[in-house]
Image (cartoon, rainbow, N blue to C red; front, side, top):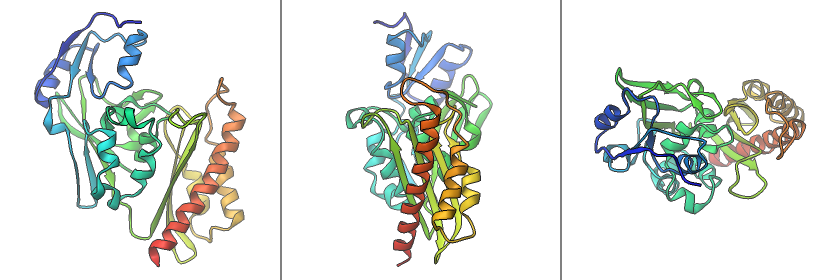
Length: 290
């Protein structure tokens, strides 16, 4: 199929892009185009105007400092995946990026585009929620920061206001003594996850002192598994404690039965993934301490 008619502009600054988006609720920014263009071809999306961000150099690049990895919205997935400084600061990024679609998609897709698209089964929103990250957005009212847990409202829906543009993604460095893990289950590698779990676990000897868990593919957004975290903190990560966390995580599944999986299967899946990722993250925390 072919898209409906649309206007096309390619501004060279963020200010120019905001000007093109202002006053037209049907105008859409074009980042990597890996999600928007197929939607347009199927006429699921029919924007009146595409504001192509390719020429805006200030939206590109990765920097690490002051405990934060700052990723320009137009940075390609592959650029972040191969950024040695970012991976040293938070190795969870490498594990996440290896599961994002396929290399050919990662060569074109952008970090900001994936976050703004807000697919509930996508990996990058899950990373941002688990890591306690945030985004910077610009609009007619100025620049503001939105925490990850306040950004994702529903499947493909964020708290960005009309005319606002996501300009930067901020991912905290991995804290000392913290291990990481991400696992997902999909029908085929590169497909959207039926369920995926990010785990960040901080250990003091055999005791878990902090945990952050998030899941994708099980609800209307990437979701933080706060009750599962609470079940882990303050004790040894033995089988009963892992089982309690897994049971708590399964209660976050709100996705309905579909052609890919039933809700019951997803509950079993997320429970198993929590046990595996927490155990692996704790193991890595111990390795780092040695």
